[in-house]
Amino acid sequence: MADEKVEREPKLKPLTINLDGRPVVFVPIQEAVRLLGISHNSVLRRIKLGALHSYRDPHNGYRYVAEYSVDDVLKLREDIAKAAALPGGGSFRSDEAVERELEAQRVG
Image (cartoon, rainbow, N blue to C red; front, side, top):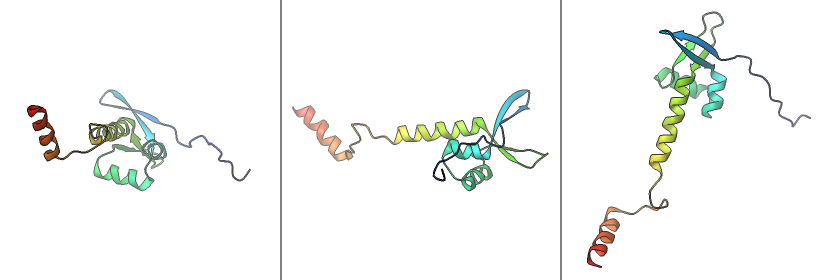
């Protein structure tokens, strides 16, 4: 029984706040940590740097992260991973190797 991990409902629920007449969903920091797969301190650091937008509840002082900014970070992460994937099955060829191959195609 001690080895079983118990799933608990999060204490804090997402908030929807109207900003400039548009509803914006804010998730608790714990949810942002889970979605992004980074530490609590890393989320706070990204908030401080402006990579994540946040809201502090004036009633209880808890901080929430804008869901759209979490989605933006996840999309950016995906785009970087796609851009980092090397063409040709992941094999890297130097410029010289590509030039030799092109020259061989021209001659042959």
